[in-house]
Image (tube, rainbow, N blue to C red; front, side, top):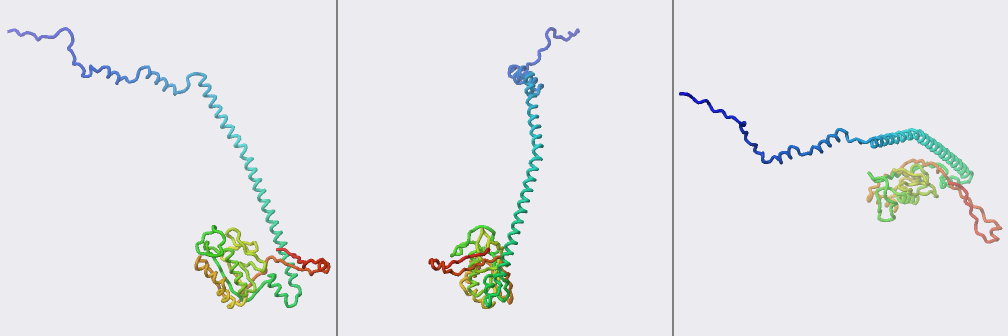
Length: 310
């Protein structure tokens, strides 16, 4: 029994199955080629050119701008290099002028001190001329001589941890200020010592006389225009124990105790067998001339002439 050969298909090739997204060919094309070819080509050319100007004029303008910027920077650097020595020279000249003026001011100040010492020495010699029993008293009251004898030592200091600066002079009542010693406090203390029997008083080595002034300049206390620095050491010559007791019992001594209680101002007072006070650095000598007969005839009063220096 004969077998039939297998049947082979002839004609067109076998048909492949269709793609599932065959019906969405337009969307597929848009997704795969999102950028138009023309745009893509222009972007590629722009990236290749490095965003530099393409025309010759633009390139020349850019080059000119770069050259101009380089010239400005170069000129600025050159001017700075030229000006630097000039500025340094002017600075040195200014420093030299300041040094010269400072030296001249110091020389003048030394000259003033020398003249003041000379005047003071001549005034002391004039006061120390023979004057009988009143010679020592006049020298003591005028502060023209050193003083040595029994007395007391009173050391006054600001309250602990009191900041420097701020606040004006303490008012006369209420103690309305900080814990710093003021010029008005020192005035009351010194006046209290005089009233208690002190024969001579000095503050931080500065001799006081009947014409001495205690003032304030900012936060500093001045005695005859010389600043003092705390703690303030007040030395008074007199009958030690009696002077100590009398002063502490006086109104000014109680004032000092009130400063301690209310503002923690510190002070210590002690009796000394011997204290030494220097002479006053400057003196004021006053002389009087008698009334003349001519002045009396005209009905004029007594002529008082003040001569001296401070």
